[in-house]
Length: 286
Image (cartoon, rainbow, N blue to C red):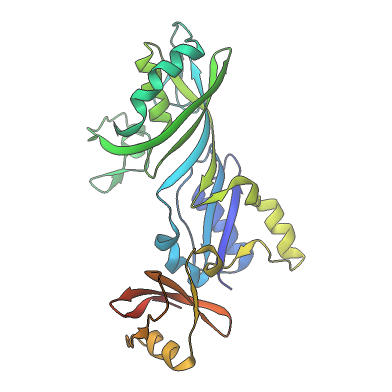
């Protein structure tokens, strides 16, 4: 068994917890996800199973999309409502005021990662320092924001859609937006609605997956080959055997325009190959 499971992760479970659940449910030791979601965030979490784990890096896309809520009038050590929350009285901005500052956050921007995060300093996660009351200097990191849309403000909360690069902290972005508006704010909700080209409506909850497994229905397990937008080439047993052994026998690239192709053997996905001059050589073969 191998493939990708697109999970609609719920609250109060870590990304590692989702992977562990699927590992036990599917009786598969090899499982891994393509991008962490905080325990209190929900949404798309893609988990690769079995030999498909070797394709995690290949399947990652540069941009992710979130819908998040920014609550004004509060500060928090974690920049969200799940940390030490403190009221910070101030003016609640209007939608017009919010939209006026958003262009300053479009494109490549610099972010200082929050102390309560899994980033490591001297081999130790930052959140462990934070628990000890130790503040560590964190160098700013460049991230890319493709778009930010404010959908409106209701009371003290504003809802946004953010499309951004991997490594972007939405809670830091919201904190910085509030600061730019001359006030305070924390993230109160976050949903990842797209990851690696998969939208939330194509995902399954853990309860749904568990019920399907009991019914021996494995439609939730997606073929990694079908998810790659490249031409498919059927190869024979000789080439497959050599490539699995690490012998890089070239394959003709005649009449193929793509720089990368999906390989099949007897109709089943077995890997990918990349162009090298007039030939293709194996990239990843299972």
